[in-house]
Image (cartoon, rainbow, N blue to C red; front, side, top):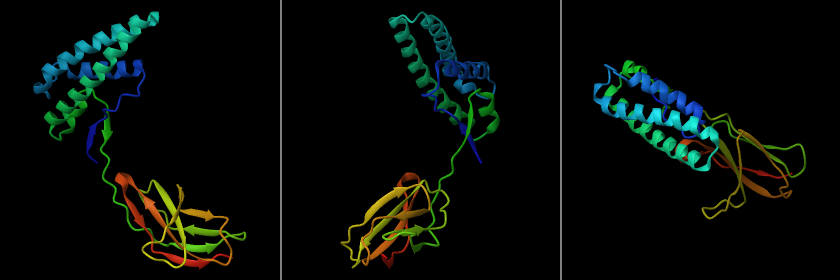
Length: 204
């Protein structure tokens, strides 16, 4: 799997951000693998020094000083992302320049394409008015939708929807003796939704 830089640092504490910035500063200083990024790296190193001093000064808890530290932090994050983009571009897919930069590495997430759910079943529940919906686990699915609508099934049918994270769900409090249609959907990244076929069952 190809490697890329981990540039999501907004949620880091000041000290963790400082630690990463110092590693990047060390890695980018006189880096023979990334000569075209040298100017941006020098500016980043200078900003890192300002941030280190600002953190120390902010221990006084003076409101103005703390605000100044926060301003420098935001500038540092922006410059870190800009420098990271330059590094990735200059590295051109080579791993050694990325490692040498001092940036933390992250695995590139491959695109997940959901397959149609398989093994869809509609089973009677343990109690009156209960129906069990289940499918085999769909790889890559983040959640599932459990849907039902009364007979007859038409293009205008309105589906009641219950969300969840498991591939099995007990639907409760359905009126007995009524014919319902059921289906499930797996929900994945980038708003992917893939449905099962529809199955019907009388509620008992």
